[in-house]
Image (cartoon, rainbow, N blue to C red; front, side):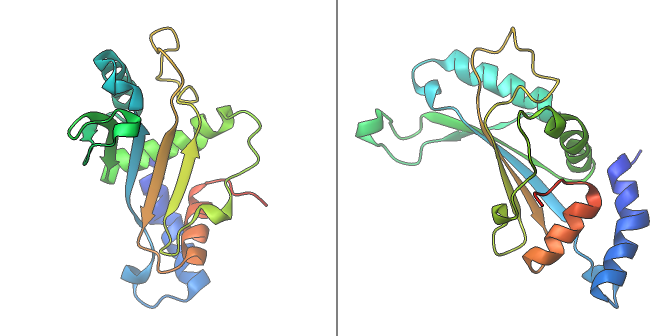
Length: 180
């Protein structure tokens, strides 16, 4: 069974993008490639339980087990040794990607305090959108009683768009609210 947002993309968004940018071939139309979610867990160097809690929260948010990222080199001022776990990441593709984006747009974003829209300056020059969140509690899957503290995360939405205007129009048609 397809995700609701994927069906919407295939039926409506592709046609609107083809008309708007005058694409001849349907393969020229920009699409989502992947969504990468990163959480930095610097406290994990002192306590391994912190990493486990963050891993369970990220798994419940995304529906996929996160990959543990280790330090590449030692930094003595941060009391960090090479190989210590310092972060978690999840790469979502296909059905899970569309389901996460649908949930993020329709459920999580409205729960952000004082939200005015996503800044257009969050795009890099390749048409990818990076969103920084200050806490994971905006997702309804996270149980506040089981969580030890608030953690920020970075969400990178990667597209096949050749520039920022194509990516912005694509994400607007999918329902991402941008700052006016």
